[in-house]
Image (tube, rainbow, N blue to C red; front, side, top):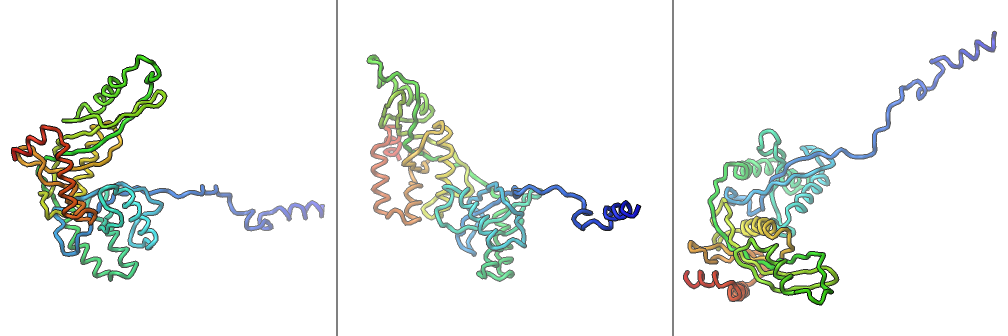
Length: 306
């Protein structure tokens, strides 16, 4: 009886360890829950500049943390790096910009990301960041009227297709090349065959394509337009061009704004190169002259009429 009592005593709850008495909890999976957020950014053209006519770019991000006033400089830096990677052709490498988290309910500015990072890094005081936010947010999130413009786009585009019996001695290379060219680039105003290659059952063609696109803008393109405005025009038209080219690889992409007659006038791509320092004014004019010399006749006629 004594031994039995001792055995019972040893298994009573008060003699169990803390770990034994504590309820078992499931082990949490070892991964982060990602947070989706919408960000709006504009290129930094100066703290006292007018941002009402600058293009506004919005991108969706997936972050391993919830951005807020307590976010660290490292987290904010990662957020800005994601913005850069999503900005694509809208921003040149290393370009400075202002960015806000967009409130999902009101669509109004939330966290001023670049301002908070400047405070974390000691470049601004909190009061300075708040003042900048007050000045810019109303311009970047206010109503922005747009007006229609038209642009001529010129680009070379490459496309490949498979299933050709190239080894057949009766195979008509020219017919196949122009057939592939027509099937992909037939929607353009003008297009011509530049090059063609074939290997095994694969046929590749490169076409030079010209097309006129409409585009609504919150500003009027002029020689005084900012590099960001000019890049915005190119990026938007590049997206439209890619859709029309059925996803073909684009190279040597050039854009002109047209005059009322439809003739190429303001050389958007050359002007952007001039603003960013990749082209001198002389090189810009030489490049434009060469491109227009090789333009289809319809555009040459329009240019002469202008």
